[in-house]
Length: 482
Image 1: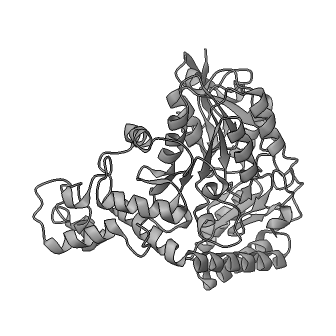
Image 2: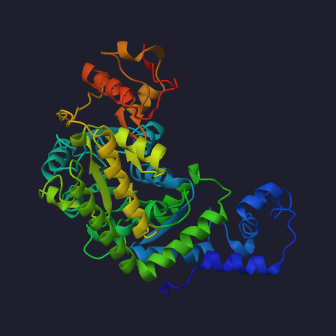
Image 3: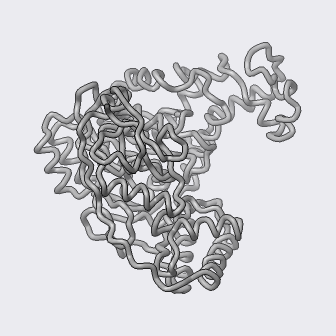
């Protein structure tokens, strides 16, 4: 299966659509006839192929025909040993990686700036995190990658750990020295798991930071929907050619949590997106880099803003930079990133990916048009002209290394009480608190709430960051260990 012009799932759906099958199975909309309003909204073609598993279309839980063929094509396209179609999002892929390589009581070496899905996996399976300080750019306030020396130290201090977890790249485009981390981890008998939620394009573009499979990692979670053009919630889970992991076991782990009613809309979108990138990826990625580089130049010409790129690279915890990311520091125009984010959306109808205390982030893809980039640049210039003030005093961002008192699982299921969040210093959190996006926890279950962490939470709330994680929707109360 090496003909990347094939799309087996899509082709099977086309054949099914031509058969004019009379459905006496689920879903109940019966090719849209049972819900005319939904059909008018989504379109007849969409409703015709929103179908259930059946012999001609294979079964996601146990694929033997068209889904199996599509998986093999995806593995070939990504340079992997196996590829699995995931329809519960990259969250499910991340959790499968951890559950496939670690068991309750095992240790995993992991950067603290992971997505909550990774820590959720630790809650599910009782794995113990060994956090590596990812560092932070003290001006920009963005988390960085993992320094190799810090990973090596963690490996030596925790030789019983089963795996090392790496972000590649981070939300902001920062990459660690993944190949070197893989070598040290493998020498210690540990698997390497890579969250590539924002790294689909690394597999297809030229002169990109190294991708997980090329670096020799054992597993990678790839959000095809983020920059690869498939439908939201669709993802690939990749297993390296030399990972030594049983394909059947990994699929069994996937089937613990993934739906038994896999959406053929999502599956076919993965199939088509893989085909598109496998056959046109180099030119698509080159276009995105050109557009992002142009946008950086124009944004920096405005003055006050700082759209950063690979000038940040230091060969250590910023080993490489993903040039498709358009990250912009805003505080020198007197506005926080979240303030610029809100003005772009509310006044100019421009939706950015995120705004934080110091930055806004635009996710670039082949779907962006030059005129849209010009519109963004013009809007940023207008925001500076109308609302810019004297530069806000730079925040001296420091990484707050959390004190882990209990495992995430112990805290999440422990005896709890609800207290005002700003009176919780000295208590052990049973919940998350995070800004979303990016979904990196400020505090996670099992960690000690400190005055510095509470100050961070309070500052983020007051600046308008979208806060999530606690049962209390207003983030005024938090559950802690009794």
